[in-house]
Amino acid sequence: MNMLDGRVKAVKHILCIVGTRPEGIKMAPLIRALKREPWAKVTVLSTAQHRDLLDQVLVLFDIKPDVDLDIMRENQQLPELTARLITALDAKFADLSPDIVLAQGDTTTVMTAALVAFYRRIPFGHVEAGLRTHDLDNPFPEEMNRVVAGHLARWHFVPTERSRANLLREGIPADRIHVTGNTVIDALLDVAAKEWPLDVPLDPSKRLLLVTAHRRENFGEPLRAMCRAILALVERHPDVEVLYPVHPNPNVKAVANELLGNHPRIRLCAPLDYAPFVEAQKRAYLILTDSGGVQEEAPALGKPVLVMRVETERPEAVDEGVVKLVGMDEARIVAEASRLLDDPQAWRAMARGVSPYGDGKASQRIVQVLGDA
Image (cartoon, rainbow, N blue to C red; front, side):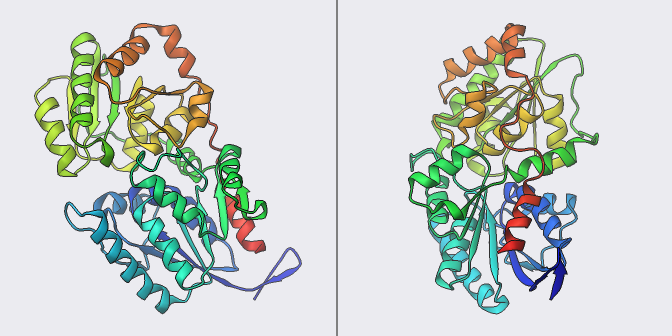
């Protein structure tokens, strides 16, 4: 038992689950905040749905998992990944008997954690809850994962009022929804305050175009169209250099190497650790991405973002005018990026440093809710 604010608080065993790099980034500040609380016994479980990418982040934030399921298999498919996660998580939940399970976002790890917690009648807290495109095919399978987790959660820690409204429309009781901001801003502000080495040779006289493209629904022709657009942009703008950290999935790596691997002003590299990737965002003039996390981080750093997707579950930055959806059409990507590269006024309008996703205190708010539960 612990005495806080004149009240006796029972120690709660909180199981924090991470599986991929974005989960590691967004859970890290929350895990660290919980570990400072005398009423919280914190266990960190890594599913390692993405092995190396997650490990990089955990090392950066000095988090060592207490349990590592080592789930990842090369070129893993969703049905077998889901089956292995359910079985492995169920065994660990039975062994650990947590009072609360926490997980973040929209991955298969999150969906299965929520499902197994439901089966075991363990209260589940969903960090970054309430994001919706209302299209189960975009993003795939993440939209379905969020919906499932959202209807099984006891606590919904939503980043924005719009996310709260999404859950209310789905019938989630208002007293279960807590607007906290997004923990990614907590992590970002901590890392961005320092300068980090970027071990990729770049020409400082060139404007940097940072690219990330890896989503499952874009495999095949959509990714090829993105790569052709990037090549066209470099040919059209001789003062532009591209940095593209390429996801290790062979569906991405093979296409990127084939279409972009031989241009002298296109740098393909392995995925960057989180700190160097934040540094790359800080140095970028413009960012092209299909990533969700970049849509949250880059606006806070004052960087215009063009999103190569047809839908986004993060519309707040679009509404603010600092992010724009451009789809996967080659001609449109080239036209929209060229407008920002050629028109300083258009670029400044998107480079305003507006962050609709939080003030860096989301983790503190989540800890307060759990401490009072």
